[in-house]
Amino acid sequence: MPTDALPPIGLGTYSDDDREQWRDNVATALEEGYRHFDTAQDYDNETYIGEGIADAAVDREEVYLATKLAPGNLAYEDALETAAASRDRLGVDTIDLLYVHWPADSYDPDETLRALDELCDEGVVRHVGLSNFTPELLDEARDYLDAPVAAHQVECHPLLQQDELRAYAREHDHWLVAYSPLAQGEVFDVPAVREVAEKHDATPATVSLAWLLSKDNVAVVPKASGREHMRQNIAARDLELDDEDVARIDDIEREHRVFDPAFGPWN
Image (cartoon, rainbow, N blue to C red; front, side, top):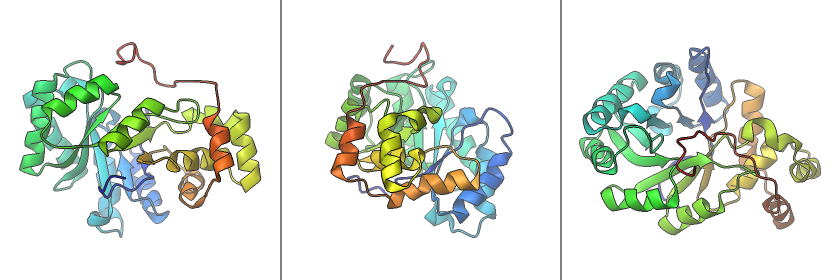
């Protein structure tokens, strides 16, 4: 298991409207026990995330803050400049984890990853992450980076189990951070998930997240904007699935990828 202090359950903050809501959502999440927040330059809400953290009665040192470089900001100078701008919008001295959002558009392993190393050296960023990479692209990135890869963020849930990338995370001792871990609600109607939920008197959301958290080196960042959904999600920390439960979900054969853009490196 990675030694990095990334809390295994965090709050995903993507939305395509009402970005200001995340100021209050972050405050609510902190009250409910969340200490890991995941945003991105492309989400256009870093300022509100930062304000929510600054306004809360929780020490900055207790909060793990991750953001992502937009695909158009991956050239060397752009990465340096926009990462510093993200840090300023977030209102922090150092970004805990900075991801490359997609290996697309202006991504160049030499320029982009050299910039990430420099950002670490300068203290703008504490840890380096990658997102939506294939195993081959991860190998390439590790050859270029001096800094260790702390996390790799990909879509992962009971309908897209990412066995190969989870094995890669274990082998190379980084976190696999699951985004869209509920497949935008698709997992709620999966019979195996529903049956395990009924057995434990839990919600399918809680069970799906608990299944992910039962895997080595896996963290999750489900999106939630209401207090009750936040509570259901974070309850996954305390739900212990037995081996039979885990096996039933492992054996789901249906596959469904929510995010599948043409530029995805798996296409």
